[in-house]
Length: 251
Image (cartoon, rainbow, N blue to C red; front, side, top):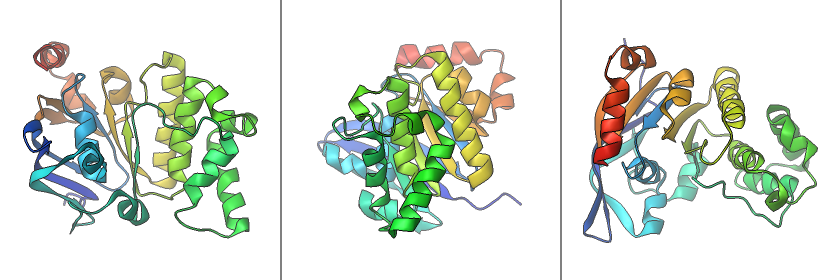
């Protein structure tokens, strides 16, 4: 029998400002210990979908006008982002949001505040994260704004992991980064998925790198799911690149 869903998104519609339709009909499922790619061109609705799941869509004066989002089979459609983070869903926004004037170490400690760990537990968590991201350990005393784009992306992911999530929503992790750094980030994501059983829902424009690491993928166009399947199933379509590029043109 199919494994029970960790996250299920059922036919959501998202409207900005009460009148602008950003997402028309998105349904998807993330099962425990899966990496799911959410693929599509710029403007297809990927970021809005992630924000609708995490509750951050309300910060953009938008809301889910139809459909539902469930986590562990409980409706979370209208729950605030900070509450969801405490329940195991954390959102790493597009654009490598870090506190530039704080050091790498200070940025990471912010991620642990939600759980309020004791000193020993906090130090143990930091060392574990530095084990996953050795680049960050060498820069732990450096202001985050002075690190590279790839290091800032790693820092944003590492900080999110200090909340001990079950599900990470990761928005455009490859944006503006060299292919070698993108591969390194996706290798770390894959290792976290294997060793820590963390699930990931990753919004990406770069199809090839996402499909190398995903268990399944959804391709969206104009706020709707237009195709889904395993990487092998999607690659078996002779017209996948044409289909994807067609979606990009129509978006």
